[in-house]
Length: 235
Image (cartoon, rainbow, N blue to C red):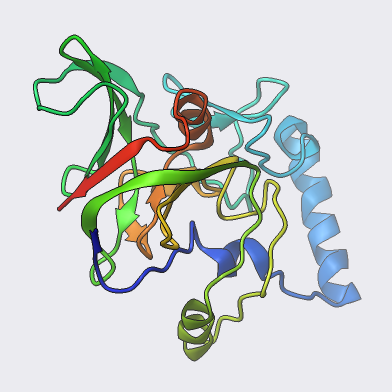
């Protein structure tokens, strides 16, 4: 049974990911001029690679940066992907009485454990519900999807509209989708364990209740978890 403040999930800042300001031709001309100056002074590798795509970009713990396919760190002016330090998954000692294959989410520590048995578990960093959106309980994984689409609940759309941010009724799967690369659906709720298009938010309490992971980690977990896996979420 899941206890919380109403199932809702945003998977990331949809307003930032989906709302694009319209610029007139004069603004575009100024931006083009500034871009040409930047390229002349600094070269263009990071910009030439295009915007962040979680399917092809990876994280470098030594550089503390998001790295594109050519190996260049994304730190160009105007990038909406800040440099950040990923929290690597690791195998840890685990003595709690949960059977092998259980997913345990410790909300206060912002960690997810996948029980391996023999006193060990895989530990992943996760993002959790912000204040007022936390929950706890037990359930099971009822569905798995790759590059899932997203349909924001009506209550979320109304809540964001009251803040002046309009959310679409449907977002197809892909690099701009707040649910990221994979989603594990929990019971009959709207809660999910999923990826994100804002990896720097993992390890924080910023979601509307869903459990958020960097795409590399959610893919790793997804490949091990079956439908029917028990999920335990504790405060």
